[in-house]
Amino acid sequence: MGGAPSEQRPSTAGKPVRCAILISGSGSGMEAMIHHQQSNPGCGHETVLVIADRPDAKGLERASSLGIESRCIPLPSDHEDPTNRRVAHEKIVHEHLLAANVDLVLLSGYMRLLTPYLVGPQVFVGVNRRPIYSTSTPLFFRHSLVLTHTAMRLLQV
Image (tube, rainbow, N blue to C red; front, top):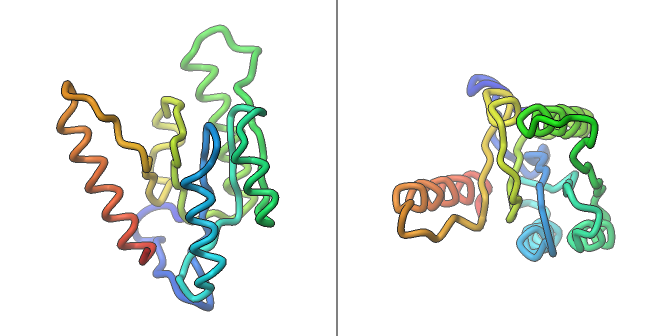
């Protein structure tokens, strides 16, 4: 994956940024991104992998029907501690991201709490397109808007 900032590369039409999208449900945002990429092949980014943690996530079917590799990676059931379970899950997700040579991870309504294992220097950037709308977290909301704006600018959409 992209890795540390020195390893980040610009996107080009000839060598687009390889995106993975993590979803939890219907995948409507993911589908819009893929439609944009497929109708604008020179946009500089392409989705190569969609991952959900729930087998009933309709977005997996949507991604497959659009020709994108999709995988359900459920949380392992062999860990009692929730943090250990999340880290074990993220290690499996990370293996799939590395195997797909992903540069950019997008969270499209992905509703899992992420640990530093997955949200760290090895991930180029992650954005959840559904910021939390809570009056108790206005700074988080503004921060997520800035991240969304920055990622969309990087992706040129």
